Each structure stands twice: as C-alpha cells, then as structure tokens.
Image (cartoon, rainbow, N blue to C red; front, side):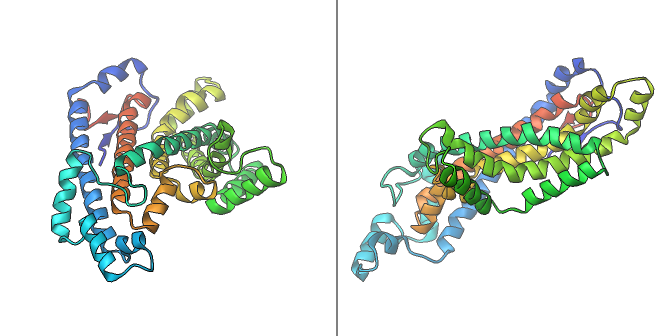
Length: 336
C-alpha cells in the first residue's frame, strides 16, 4: 500500500524541490519494497490461477479430442499433457518452467504459450494507450468545465450525458458504433486490425465509459479545490480564474485523478474482453476467451503472467509520479 504524507492543503511549493524529493533514500527504499511486494503479488496471482483453472469444470483432453474420443484416447492425451500427474507435481513443474519463462505449449496453437501471448499483447497495449489518451484529453477538460459551472443547468445536462455514458454496457456501445459507422455509414473498418483506422471504434467504445467515470471524478475534486482556503487567498491576491484552475486547483486535484487513470489503464492491459470480441480485435482479451473455451491451461497461465506484470509496472509508475505532481508528497515517509 502506498504511504503518502503531505502537509495541510496550501498553495503548492515551488517546483525546484521536486527532484531532491524524488531522488531521496526513502524513495529508493520505497521502490525496492514495492518491487518486492509486486513480485509476491504476481506469484500469488499465478498460484491462484493455477489452482482455480484446474478446479473449474471441463477437461482439456476432451476439448482436444472431441466428442467421438474413446476413453483410451482421453487417457493418452492426459498423459501426453502431464495432466495424469498429481496437482502438486504439476505445480512443481509449473514453477520450474516459470523461472525460465517456459510456460508450456499451448493446446490450441501448438506453440509456446508465452510466445503466443507476446504476439497478441502489442495489440492490447495499442488499444489501451489509445483509449486512455482519448479519456485523458476529453475527461479532464470536461470535468473542469462541469466544476466551473457546478449546480447550473449546463452542468446538469453534462451530468445526464456522463451518467448515460456510465450506464451503457461496453458491448451495447460497441454494437451501436459498429452498426452506425461500419454498416449504415461504412466509413470505418468493422473488425480486425487492417489499418490504423481500425483502432478508432474499439478505442472510442472503451473510452466512453472511462470518460464518464473520470470526468465526474475531476468535477468532484475540482469543486472541492475551488472551495479550499488557498484558492480564496489566491483570488484575494488578484490571481486570474484561468491560473487558479490550471495552476492551483487542478494541480492539487491531480493525484486522485492520476490514480484513477492508472488503475483504468492497468485494467485495460488485462484485456478489454467484450470490446475485443465485438470488434474481433486480436488482443489478449479475445485470446483468453479462446483459452477458456478450450481449457488451454498453459495459455491462460501465460496470459495472466504477462498482463499481471504490466499492470504492476503501471501502478508503480503512477506511484512514482506523485512527487512530480505535488512536491509536498513524499514516498515512504515524510521529509523532515
């Protein structure tokens, strides 16, 4: 858990203290401790997934052999896959392969599972980056606009729109966009990744929900910041509303907003399953669906490993950005 300590709300200090605050020994110790926690988190996640997928109903041998397979055929396939061994033996072999990144051969693709995931993960990362950039560009100005017009008719109308965006399921939004822009007005590709224009509909579908969530958070944080004493003092000194908004209020509201954006981005890296299936996007989300349908244990485990590492790295990067946004924040412990 990130330990953040800060002085009472006030006008942010000068930025010349950012680098010394960021490069302190407590920060280095914090990074090392977080890395250790991250390794433990990933290990526990992989262990949990290993146990759960083997407890789930279904038989990989049956999925591979088909409904006409005999009992002898199923027994032979289980032997070839090592599924006839005890779960403890399978787990020991899994840990041994984990340290060498040899997670086994995918049952579906007949190729190393880790390589299959690495071929798909760039598409998911591309979609996640496009969606989070669109979310940031739209939601922050929209949230500021709503905060500056709080409790007005305009802000009420914007609230209705954001609540509607928050209420629409991803699959319904994707199908509506697909129907309108790929069928009725065929200006964008309907599925797959052929050109960069193929990225527009999936990214917009993912971003709509995120924009609704983040803009409402920005609005709430900005309204609270506008009511703070340091903003009142700034106004009494003749500081313009534009400077108050961007230099004071937004900066003091940036940490919770950044945390929310980082969390949403990390979840996107785990695969936006529904959107990837709707648009036949060749990312890890659709890959997981196929792996679950065929009980492809190595592929599921490789996907969890890659996405868990990416999510942990994103969260660590977000934590390290806190002192850059607010020089009062210290990672690990408060500065004397």
